Image (tube, rainbow, N blue to C red; front, side, top):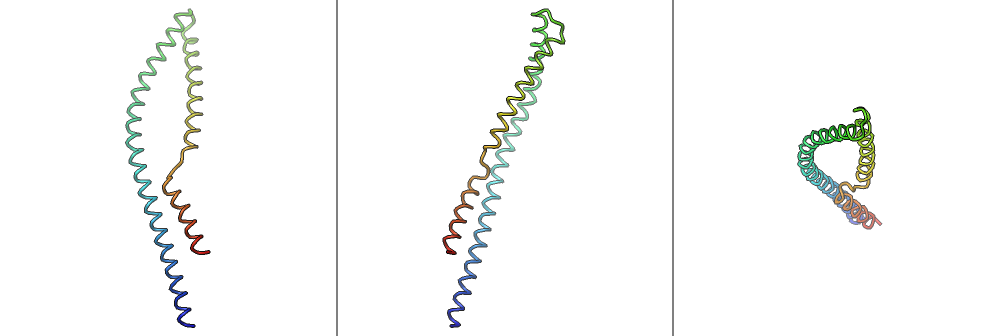
Length: 129
């Protein structure tokens, strides 16, 4: 009887140890995956920031030219040309914000970690049943 109790205790210890190892492995995978994503996103963000600065300056010149051109072409006062351009820019901003937000919401984050967590949960359930 004591031998049977001892093997159950060993079995429980082994299961706990396996679960701890599994949790440690999942945490290590998540950390590695986050580090990789941060590195990739950091470089992309720096490049996009540089492009954005140059693009904003160029865009301001183009929009100013368009506003003055509209005012001159239709014999409007300058404020009317700038008003039309501003309305077009606000409409464009709203569309881009809507599309960007939808893309951000549908993006899947930490896919490997999520998949392995599901697999591990199934494995634990199968082993404990």
